[in-house]
Image (cartoon, rainbow, N blue to C red; front, side, top):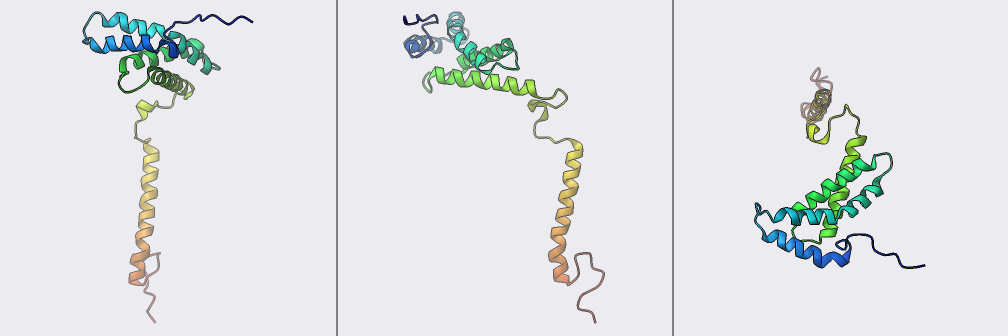
Length: 167
């Protein structure tokens, strides 16, 4: 069997490290408003689109592969924009970013529509749950405080109806 010819961008894989490093070095050297940033950024994104497609395909199942690909591409764009060449390896960073974006998409897609999203929910609990928790905690506090107080007064936990040392 003949060896398979690479049909992907030479930027992918470890062979593309020098190309990727040179592009990120040029990108980081340019100012934010520089018109040369756009084509370099686009080259980095389009060069890694096959990787985004692969990650989307790995998570395909019940979800539409197009939606997963869109999420993976969003993760790739965020990875290109946030990557710091001095701190990390881009492929590792991009794979984690794309995988996280796809997983977040799947989590949000499988969430019931009437349930609040993670952003909407925050740390607040629904009012009935909060009221029930407050009532339960108040009852527990009352019981916990009643035992030492009634012991020192020599009364039962039920209340100071009668002292226990009376004849």
